[in-house]
Image: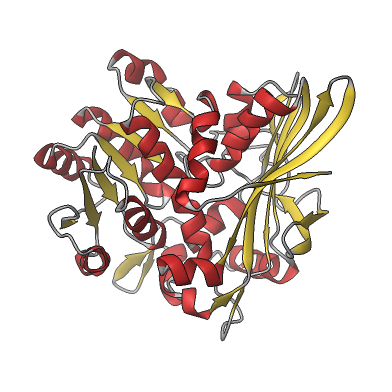
Length: 401
């Protein structure tokens, strides 16, 4: 399989490093707006013919189409911030390629009731084009990272093997990771973090559908495994809530993130100062988006690994009934930063995000997962994915609650 990887930040770099060992990969084109960064990642891979480095403007659909056709790629992997999803998604369709991303097209709050009703939902742009993708015989696999991605596979696995009836699918994410020397240094894209944390969170309930709440609502303390311990989690806007109900029969879907009071305080301050604004404003003689300024002022998550310590946990809590008895489980994956730095040379959060899409690429390349249209990971049989996890040094656990 030939892949055009658009975006070689921390997650994109990790995708390339993980995929290089797999014999199903013929070529992966490393495309980024920053050509020097693409070449930096290329130098780690040791095979410039298999991993050519090129420059691309992800906001320009025609550039992406031209690159895809020049290299004859089978699939475009979108590893950019979700603000670029529409041109990349549309370029894949025009070029006749399969498509994958790790975050769906962006939402827009309801104009008058943002904290009770959804406006434009995550992924609406993509799902509205499902029929065209099916007619063309192309697959757009959306939400293929760890959350969403692995978390969705866990939900489908629980439905298939662990429950007769499901009451709630609740994704819970927490960590004890610290970044030495920084009071505030997000270990993932700050652009995406601001987007998902400050938008109204979405909840899905049977009979009620999707509805929203105020940011950071419904706090709960969740005890994360493998030494992470209790972390307060709050509602955050996330793709699983938009994906899981389409393919998993359940009564409620939620996503809660362990952010901590200090981190939430910083995010609220950014909103108070309008520094979360993603639209450009005029400053002197130039135009710049305040959120881009914030991102430029903070350290690059791709280069923080040597200063990070601790573990991060991604997982799916499922409650319901099995054999007539109540059951509640937590399926999870824990990544230790010391281990990922030692074995892959990348920090834990970006490595954990990158493994799932590479596994999914392998399943698509080998014809194990095959379909057309716009699909989430839970649209497919979870068993082949779970079988491959140990091969990728990506162990999972299950905790009865």
